[in-house]
Amino acid sequence: MKIPILTTKRLVVCLTFLAVFAMAARISVDTDTWWHLRAGQWIVEHRAVPQQDPFSHTRLGESWQYPGWLVEVPMYALYRAFGPGGLNVWTAAMVTLTFWFVWMTLSGGAFLRAFVVILAAAASGVYWAARPYLMTFLLTGVFLWILEEERKWQSAHSHGGERARQWKIWLLPVLMIIWANSHGGFAVGSILWGAYLVDALVRIREFANLQISKRSYVARLLIVGGLLVAAVCLNPTGPVMLLYPFKTVGIDVLRDFIQEWQSPNFHDAQVQPFLWLLLLTIGALGVSRKRLRLVEFLLLAGFAYLSFMAGRNIALFTVVAPVVLTRHVSPFLEEAGSRLGFRRSTQTPVRISQWQSLLNWVILGVLILAVAFKSSLVIPEKVNQEHFEETLPVAAVDFLKEAQPEGKLFNSYNWGGYLLWALPEYPVFVDGRTDLYGDELIGQWVQVVQAEEGWQDVLDMWDIQVILIEPFRPLADKLAGEGWSLYYGDDIAVIYGR
Image 1 (tube, rainbow, N blue to C red):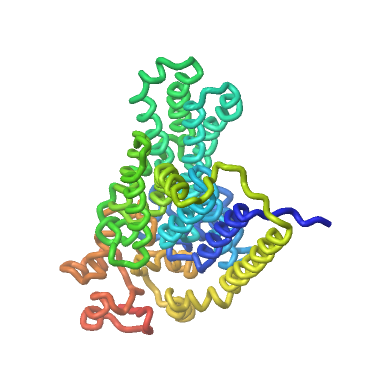
Image 2 (image 1 turned 60 degrees about the vertical axis):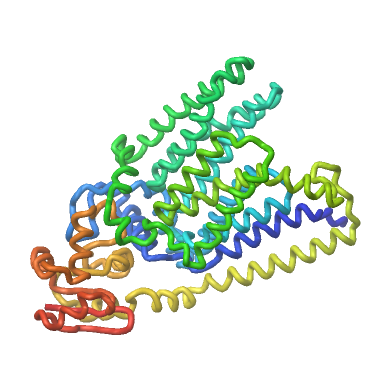
């Protein structure tokens, strides 16, 4: 049987996505993953989407509508079937799929695309976790690809292009229905749509001189925008979900105390690839002979601004920036390569021999095995459990299950999600659902853990009898002298009771 030819270009594409998958194949279950799993479990057990909080004692029964059920249920199913290792593989697959859509929006040859995708992946890696946020990451890439395809179509002059491409934009409202039932970041889809609409409106006079099919670009965008609004309303909560993004970003405590909502720390080595991507993009604009499109400026400036305001948005910047970077640097690199005697990527590819193709297959096979081996290291239950024991109060939870001290619990914010999953018999004081607790309650939590004036009054108001926190908290130093007894302690957690 004749072996298919594997060209160097195709090998580069394969290696790029193997590299992305390998980078993303790691322990991805973070502190917020657990409350999503608990919500998914509740939905499966009750065959309904919760409309009131069933998990805390501070907000029990109060209105809570989170747009994540469409991901939480599959996450719970994956966890039950394959354990945390299944979630690790799912995370890697979602990240890889996202960058496939990024790849399809890029300009230039395979080597340039590969370099930019790997850099973008490195920049976004710090925010990969097994959470519904991955749907926002993926759908940002899908929306951008569809909107770019539509923009390219309207710039083309052939009717054949119209018949081939114009249908994709009508997928956006359908995808928005999925997005609005998967994660609160669905507002990003509207931001992307808005950038392309503003660009089209600014150039409306240019379109007026073109044929009717080109002018309809603006009309289609406006219609799609209306359908996007309607699509968000198709969820168990209804139109009130339109306000969800504003509710979340309006919580001041997020920016003050939650790391991923704070401005990035540029001294952190994990944030450095974001700076490299940003600076390379600015440099590409400097050497480019192409005019900077308004939509490119809006995307670059808008998502850079969001990234500076909250580090979690860096992942979204890594989806949109490569489009601008490759469009402007690709012609410069081709011209520089031509002057140095390299063949342009637009020329007919050089045919390779069977031996060269076989060598490429061998390289690909070896790297597939390497990636498979690397990925297998994060699948075993034991490996994940050891990681959890190093980062979560696993032993402290075991103590509470056995001793079962009576009374309401005050807990660390970072562990709230894990306690919902591992210790459901003790409703939590607070967890990662900041949209539920708001500034008032999270502010009270900060007041207590920092042992600020009036912290005892907060504990008395909520009738707290048991406290589970990190030993380094100022509160831990205060409790012993204020009528509390140490029930349990280790390097990760301490438990106090009245």
